[in-house]
Length: 114
Length: 113
Image (tube, rainbow over all chains, first blue to last red; front, side):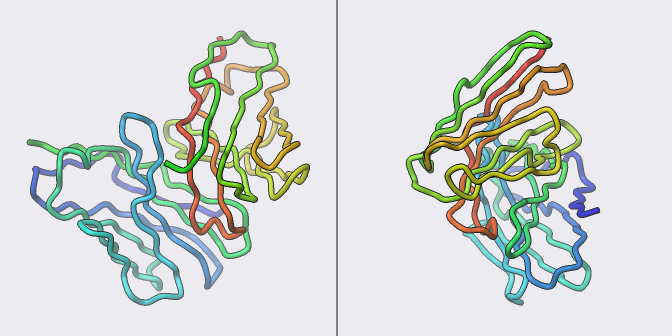
């Protein structure tokens, strides 16, 4: 089965601190994409960051960065200087080149404490 | 936001009735998708379309059908709604086959009583 596992159903972080959300995945492919999506209470799915598996360099988008460990099939999201607006459900997802599906994890609910 | 509109935003219906959800895009993207979101499952693909009148099944397609008569519109139909189809339904679009970047609509909360 093609799975994406998020082992932390809930996480909390103090405002201005750093938090890391974990994600592991299963694939037999060598070329694929990894994503983190944010879903705030508005229900909108917002792309936070994307990583191409053939790129060694970890992706970064402002306060958001990933730690991509291809051999370990691990793709964690680090949020630095956490803000109240970061509170949301975060989904990790994986796709494969040429395929037409995006496999999602079950999500991690992040609470930001003022 | 990418130009994706889902309608209705909320719907309550009874078991056994047909239901159609609509997705409209203004981005002229080739690929359109229907996902459902359930607690403990994340999002799962129901059906997708890779062009006008070209559709294919996803991992949870039983009980659902789709149609795409125009590039901008993708309809999801529940022929006879069941309580197990109570869910939040998301439409998504992409301009590439590799799901390199999906843009999502705001979702439809469907309750089947």
